[in-house]
Image (cartoon, rainbow, N blue to C red; front, side):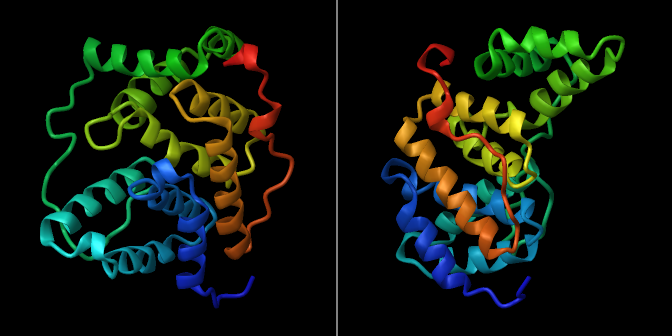
Length: 219
């Protein structure tokens, strides 16, 4: 893998290719997750620098909001340091209570629907795994929509899964994207953007389903 990546060209191309509805405030979420999952988390810094060089982030308030959103994307993937510091503590009041459980379960059922019960059943005696998935993975992290809403969260989750070549999970979250309001055309464009970033990072994605393979009756 070549260590020299023309990041400006990569970021401009990804932004231009991203679905118009999400281009202003969503493409960098997918880019952040794809860079991390492709083994190049160090390029999140250049992504941030690229973003703040644009007119959209001239003010300190704009940059703090950007940091919050990029940080939330990284929390859903992995924690990194970035230049501007935003000192809010998103999960300060988190509790492992019934509300947390219900929040995680609600998002799981939105994304997986009837498959949720089948997945839990396949785990047999490993009852701690459904709890971790519902209360921690989703309740604490992925279903926390205080910074990124459910659709924006899928802009993070899908690339993070795709870049690990996880075919079944990719299928579930392609379908999940459709279930939370993205169109097939938007999801296909996002897949292509993820593939663009992965290829630039030297990561080969293979054997993954495409959104066109998701039947209408499964949505």
